[in-house]
Length: 606
Image (cartoon, rainbow, N blue to C red; front, side):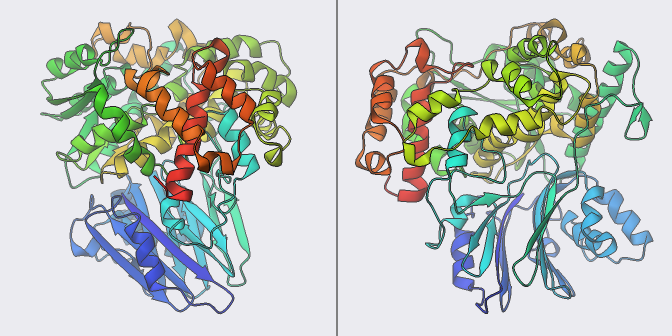
């Protein structure tokens, strides 16, 4: 896990070592172990390293192989098997790193090499013979890759902070990004971001930048949800039991791959929920002893308990893990929120971002790699709104975008397009781009509306919410997070499972069946709850005053994103029913977080 950056020019301008060094400095926490630069006239690449595989100097980046130069962020879990294949094809290796496997695979197969990689990755290759810069991002967007067109060239980096170190980036608000930000709870699907001058490569895509500045993209992976006769060359299960057993085997493989592809110990972020508890059980099944597990909790509020230690303790005791509990007082949360927002590549409204940030700070003192349960709800239908969408989708034309949006929006959108027009300053007004995007995605083809919803969630929505959040908050402390539930082979299999199987018994039926007998029943059968974080959940007291100060600041007024009358209504009635979204997010917090991020990263005033 690392941070990468680079630039290429086609107008005669040379790459700048000073500029690249500043970009690398903005990513030093992503890769605290080592750093490097490579330049050749109009192109330059930079790398910050978090050493996980091949800890020796042989794993140093940028890595060169004759006319090829590579910078890479991520982990290729099947790199050892690929190395054997490539050696049989005549390639000679000088390291045992997955980085070198990417270089040799590109030499053997060109950009089609991405089809062979199992894992999470964002990388850039400079091919001096072709005079081309090649960028690629993994199938599920687990690793970020941003780029910014500049005068006569393009820069790229693992985070926006690195790109914003230069003053030639257009930092005006992107109206399309703003529409998504305020309707999809801060999810801005690629290629857009909240800023006009910064874009991100879509998951499952690679891009070539030619010497004349032309850019060509290609999608190399698409998630199918139609129940064909087979997936991955194997016939699909027929019965409920067969589905459970097949997914169990595929999940065990996903966990094992993420365990063995590391030359350092691997821990688990243990929340006390089903998903992370199941990871611990499967690691024990794989023969791992003395598993390092970590849980975080917060001070109780009058209305709500602030931790789930009683559930994580059950798992820690059952499997005798090396368990660490971290308890944070509510007084610590708001001051540390500043740091969490500084670590955000884009504005994220999930209030548990600060929890992941604080947890990662402590976990990074013990291990460099952790497994996390992100993605399980979206892959296996764990949220309450999926059943409602499934019911709404039974009577619609699956090829009609308008009907698809009508069945989706009431249970997910933060606000309607009409409300967005009323809330946002007219200078940012655009057509209903969110409904267009969602409508197109939900009518790509599939055998059920719910499976199309889950495909949208897995391939697009969670990429820019929990997945990005976990990457940003863990990498802020040089900690690599691995997400077995987003193994692409597991996702492909689950996507073809019958929709009814996923939402049976209040969702995640298959995972509950797998867990039965190896995870305590108290965890399996408890209702799903949001991560408890009382200090940032209730819109009152110091939290309310902080948001009010942000939204009435001179910077916010000068920016003029929001209709002031509508904003005042939220400030006057922050806990009114209409001040919350369909999934109970605070609209006031959504506005305040956006302004907070802009002040931190664009204005740089806080």
